[in-house]
Image (tube, rainbow, N blue to C red; front, side, top):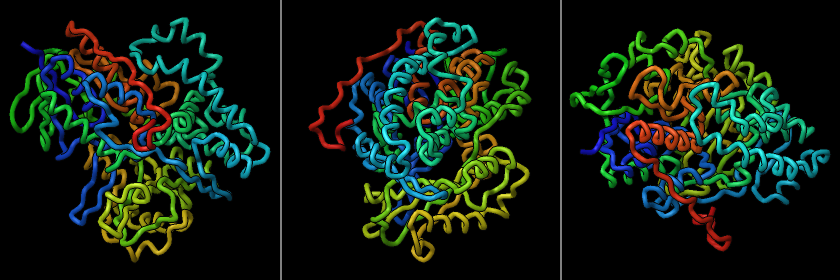
Length: 515
């Protein structure tokens, strides 16, 4: 008789776990509160014919997901068409100047030197340094960290001089680039983790390296199309996905989880994987008395990432002279970050990300129309901000900021609009404090200091997603699925499943088919 595993949540981590476990012969049931797969990596579809990614729009470092697909006998590139972007994105500096980020090293060197002649040649040195750092540290992002003893491996200790955990990301970039604008171009990626580059550990310089080394992709249909493909493949492998079926409670025998309760009844299983937001699901579903290490008080005391203010706009017409990805960096970036992290107030000149995806993928809107996705990093839920009063005002701030990116006259062209605030992220999408990037990724909340993939407080419970090791961001969430699946299979006495890395495509392939 096959073993049964329940998965709470059909986000990218839960779907990857479902595929891996089903491939090992386990009967898998996934319970998803929303009517569609993907969680925060799902698609918003409108009656007017517009489609938006709910959350992530950058698709980076496909290798991990390619390997998961290969284990399941599938080819990611055959299942999802992906276009490699060049330029990857456009940076607009409030302090003056622009930069088109390209993975072409000579062109990128020229872009850097144009903006800051003193930094000519620094990009190549940055890439060479981080190539070595990533190659040596990447294996540690693919294994569990369950105690401080895991930090004591001789291999990891040898890496400390290279990783420089005592140094901030901005300070690390200062060893390569003198111009603060150029440093911002290679450190704003800390926002993928919901952190400031002035506090984020220097290790995460590998984030911008990965963009240039392995590319920034647009999956046709958006990142939600990847989740939809994973859900389809999982079901073809025998996984049961129950949409519109929230987990209402959990059953325990002592400290061991035995079943989940939903509107359709009780579902028993040998193990349960939690892909829902860690802090929100623990405080709602697992009694405080069961959680020794991660009780309510401990969770409330942790440092959480920022949140995001979102606008999803369906537009009459197109902005074909505007890049696919656009990042505006506030004139006083440090002040903007302090407003988010310390003062918990709304900035008058906030940094902002805008996706104008239809310049690459016209399938996302009706003919002659387009979509705009606006994201402003803001504080997670805090008493200083009443979003019932501030939402409308900040919408106007966001629309005004579009002028800085070169998008004008947008108000008269809006045909669809949806707004999300930190309140909505918490109340509608079950995210603790609306902190869209989960627990912050400082040194006290990384590796074994994050909630463990084999959850230490509940027997038979496993975690996957941004709230556990290795952390937030799609590539590492897929990596967490492999770590979690391996641990679960080990505990059930079943072999781990691995495949050889898929062969890299030849340079002669088209961008949609080649990495």
